[in-house]
Amino acid sequence: MKQLLLAVFAALLFSTSLQAQERREIKPKDNMRAQQQQVGKQLNLTDSQKVQRKAVQEDFQKKMQELEKNESITVREYRDRKEALLKARKQDMEKMLSAEQKNKLTQMKAAETAKKEEQFAKHLDKMKKDLVLTDAQVTQLKIQRENMKKQMMALKENEAMTREQKKAQMTELKKEAKSAHDKIFTEAQLKKIEERKKKRPDQQSAK
Image (tube, rainbow, N blue to C red; front, top):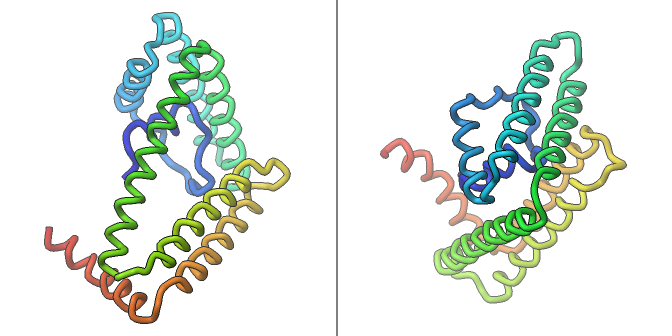
């Protein structure tokens, strides 16, 4: 699961992920308030900023409620309008921050990224031991991950493409990534990976 801080960023300051394709309920007010308090504590928001943030969030929720009630639009129109509302909220949230707070936010994002990289390194190290990967295979996995990240970022920032085009391209990227990923491993390693996948449901049900 994503860390709370990342969820807070996604909810309050950043646009929605390209993979969020289905309609979702607006988060309960109590949960949103708790997230806002977390952000406020981290960025040391002033009382005035808290009032502004509350107004922005309430306006967003009102517009989302109106959008949810609109049954005359297509799913695609709903997604586009929701994305526009999220983008506007992000911009309004960022406008209220001081230069120092924006710098702090950048540091928080960097810390979250560093934490993810550390988790990936530990996961890769465990995979190396479990599957007896060679150094060359480990290097290939790292390169593939970086290439995938760059391609996904470029896709996300491409304003010339429609949401449907981005969705289709994202699906294609995932297929290509899986194909390239599988080619890194030997047949024996792939077999072991599949065996571990089959065991996961049993392990979860046993808990």
